[in-house]
Length: 496
Image (cartoon, rainbow, N blue to C red; front, top):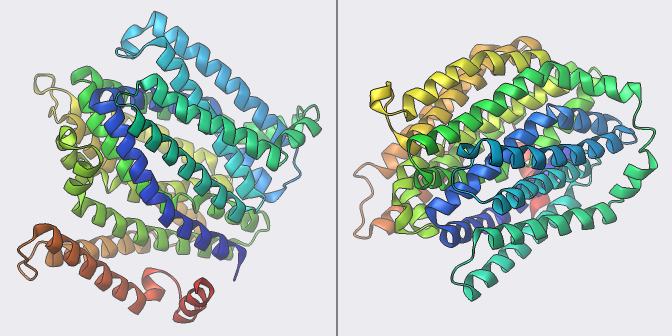
């Protein structure tokens, strides 16, 4: 079995373990904080993440692509130095915003803001270490470590939830921050990250590395600025026209929906690594083939999981948050389909970066951004200001529509670069959407399966639905999954 298949299968199997653990963590987050505090926490964390992404401006992609093709590069040291600078600037920026623009953080104390900001920073550093380990082809070790971290986090929150009736936002963030700091220190020691940084630290400040970073950062500067300001505006507008509770409904629906990405986003670094290697070796046919395989498989998997979570939205929200989050149920119904498009966007982004088509990627984001502002206002603003005043569900609808627009434009340009027929990409998406939607409706919402117990009916109906969809996928595996029967047999043998 090839390295990429082995790594993907391991990530997929560990993803199965991580999903219930993440659901339990969301249970603790929602129950401990409540809608308002949960909304405030997620608002600050999201803002910190977006501003860090702006400071990054593509340098992380440059780092990962370079390390994938040359794991001895001195850019390793330069990138981690830049991360430390980014985190320092972020702390100073948020402190300034707190004092000079208080309406940006209407419901948070300075201590909470600083702690959440550093939590965002250490998550970013930890992810950079994860990327470097993936680039160095130590995926199996990495996935095992991720499972240990999430299990320890789960144990900590369980203990605090059982012992303390009221856990403050600061205590909540401190637990998270401690786990991330310990993880960074352990991996840095175990994988000799500090040694690698110090060994090439002074040599990393050279013209070659600067020029390589500029190749990625320069075309993405205005794109990064736009994709930072627009998401900040989204959440701020929802909080401004509504309140933190409405933001809490959106936050819990968003967090639960993106758990789907546990299955798929884990594969994206592997895809980036392999496509960078293939493109650098000028294997263009193999690059095209890898894109098509990845696109088909991940679209099919994410869409199937999205439908299942949508079907159980009410039960999931009631279980995780309780009745106080009841208004988040329709938001989750809509948000379930965002991860499908987000997965395709991640694959497309990796293709643009790995094939050095960064200017095109940047222009797509910049030119689509005015549409995003109009859509946000239309769905979230009150009716007397020419909006629909849909609150959290309005923001969810905007996410899905806008992501669909951007992904479609990206696919159009990728089809030109990779020599793939654009109509084949669109037709495959439409066929998958139509077939799975139709089967879901016929099985889950028709009169064919009726039981006295509604939960039992829903479980049995969805099991039948999954069975039929998987049967269809196996019957036409070459079309739906781009994989032959022989390959399926080999994979099953390896797993058993």
